[in-house]
Length: 166
Image 1 (cartoon, rainbow, N blue to C red):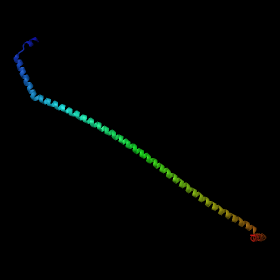
Image 2 (image 1 turned 180 degrees about the vertical axis):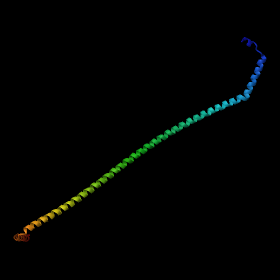
Image 3 (image 1 turned 45 degrees about the vertical axis):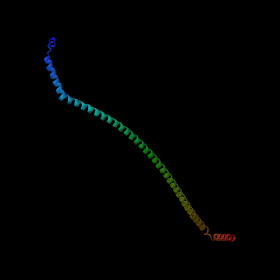
Image 4 (image 1 turned 180 degrees about the horizontal axis):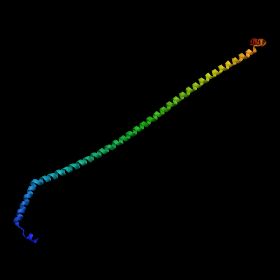
């Protein structure tokens, strides 16, 4: 290795330096600009993507807040609807009870009237039957009594005495 270090040649160094400068110039002219441009475009793309992601994140947060607000409003509206439905149900039940009580009272009153009417009719019928039976009994008794002529004359004379006394 020592042999290689001692054989340094300026000519070779000069030509290598020239070739290196030509390669750097050619790379600078044709390769580095496109590479740097590509890197800058990539950097800009990444920056745009980060900005878009940040916008999306903010939009997502806004939508989440909006969604939470809508959920809250929907729950409140549901609660209000349930309250109104309960009030309406209670009102309908109360009205139905009231109507049922009124109708029940009417039916009871009507039943009482019908019972009273039936009682009056039954009493009248009993009176008619009792009077009919009394007349039949009286007819049979009088028929038995008037078979004898002397008893008839005695009855007529008693009746005449009563008429004169009154």
